[in-house]
Every structure is written in structure tokens, then in C-alpha cells.
Length: 236
Image (cartoon, rainbow, N blue to C red; front, side, top):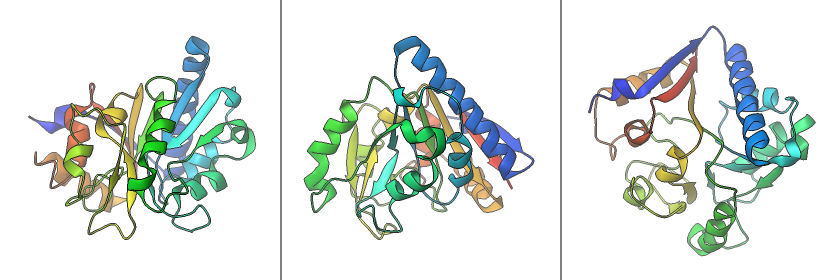
């Protein structure tokens, strides 16, 4: 496997230009799906990187009432916690025009992701068909979604033939238990984009492209199993 053949790398002059372009293309994909099937789905990631993108996308003019937004992965914490991805999405994406969208969280009232798994699995299964758009990120250890090196369910999460839509995840590098969409769920998306910013993340990507061990750097599983070259957008 030559992983370089499996990415489509796009560099932007600034983070603002990246956010504007990614928001415009995401909005186009959502509009197209709504026109074809009446509804569209968007899965997004947490962290600081997507904030500008969220804010740009929130202003897009489209039929947001026909859009369901969910998360690529989530920390098993209440939405009142600063580290909640749901909180980030509500504060930055579910604003302006996008306030009309439906949001499907990945955390339940259960005390653990294992306990909440049946309900979360049902929520994700109820989304209409494959995801229209999924935007993923990249950690300094090569994780994406909650596919962490040494994660207790990593092999299940990145199994390209797996049937699960979501799995719990606990890992040494993750302070809280997590829940995550699985590799097959993500690579089935109509538009799948890896959004990274800064020289450090570019170096992590370069390292991932030089090897093949997905257990060492799980982003390699996404690159290897995406049905088309994985689109990567980057700005300093």
C-alpha cells in the first residue's frame, strides 16, 4: 500500500480561507443531498480547529430544517462540561441559520459509554442513510475520531468489515471514556474531509503517510480504506 495515492491534499493561504471554502463546499453537498433525497446528515469533530469552519457554515443559506448534525466522536461528559464536543457545536455551529438544524448527541444519561451504547447505536441507525458529509480531525499521536493508539476497542473501531456503527473507547491518552463512529460509518460518507491546521499537524500527517501500521497511527486506517483519495485540507 502506498498511502500517498490515497489522499488529495489541498493547502490554503490562511485558516480563514480554508474555513470559508470548506463551509461553502459542505453547504453545497448538503443542498445537493436535500434536493435528491429530502434530508442530509453532517458529522463533525471537536477541538479548537473547526471553530472558524463552524461559524462560517452556520451562516450558509440552505434548508437547515432538513439537516441532521451529529458528532464524529464524543467524550462521555455532560454538555455543561468545557470538554464536551456537543457544547462546542451548539456554541459555534448551531447558531444563525444553522440553528434550525436537528442535533443528535452521542452522550446519553447512562453512566458510561458502554451503558449508553444501545441508545446511541439506535440514534445513529436512525440517521437517513450514509452520512452526507463527515469532517474529521487529527491528533498529535495520529488518532482521528476516537481511534486512539492502545484504545481498548481500537481494532473493533477500525475494522473495515465491522457492522457496528459506534463503539465505546477507553485509551491511555484519553482522560475521559469516549464514544465514536466506526471506520465503516465514516468512510461511507458522501464527502469525507480531514481538516488540519498548523505545521505540527502537517508533520503528523507526513509521518502517517510514511508507514502502514494503523494500530500505531489510526488515521492510516481511514486513508487506506476510504473508497476514494481522502481529501485533506490544511493551512498554517
